[in-house]
Image (tube, helix red, strand yellow):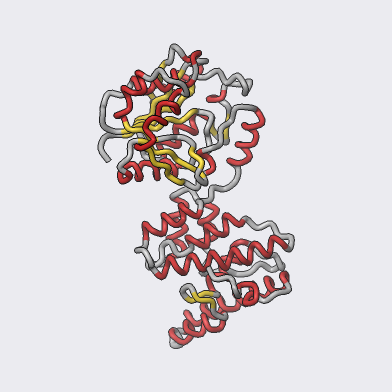
Length: 375
């Protein structure tokens, strides 16, 4: 990738349908605008510029405090494309690229921005669109080479209309991040997105696969094992939910896929959990941290941690085996070490307890549940 990347946040509009000024609405522990700024800073994009217009006097003190460059749009009444023009007018270098993010799209994940930056360096294209399940969203990453075309555009459809003329130079990057599609125009949208924000951040399956690919070579037995554990854990969780439980399937799948992310390192469960917390996936990290050692609860409740622990212990590599077979090999290997043998025996008893509870709840053996459904 050549040239620097700039992030433009468009915050000049009237917010007329919201009935309140969107950039300064509270969102979690901060404001909508501050969240957008933090998104790009967290993704390693230091050059952040905010296009201001309506109520700019309310934004300028905040931008000064955050050391972010304001770009006044004196034609903001003409609509969003006028803010796009204001933004790209500030570009000086022909090399590099820029993000464009309307301020009212507050749930884009940092990993999505990072993915676009990485992809820009290898895609060989000038326009990258983030997507969720094939639907393009925001923020696009656009080469600075389109600056003059944007400034001279007189056609219909604003920036979208212009970029459609260059579809051959565009690529869609699947992010697994629904946040690239979610905007908030109305109070109802705002309330819905706030509720979504309160849910723990969980990486999509695609992001999990990317994290594994960055750690292990293609075809690695570790990746095969992680996929098999995710398959078995999801089978149990889905059947548990059908019986009245309320297990988070997305969380279980992500934790199972990533439970051996730090395999090969000392205390790999703790090391993997630390990696995931560093990426913002604290709920996943909590499950990964206990996938090696877990004491079942005193009651008969079955948790996501229980299912991950059991699924991991039911598999040798990507092959389903009885618990006794899995642990027999370990007990034989460490037969001369009393301390390690005691720890292995404890894990076996925990796995037996969890399996018994699952089978009692489902009135079905785990083996029968899993048979005939290969990962």
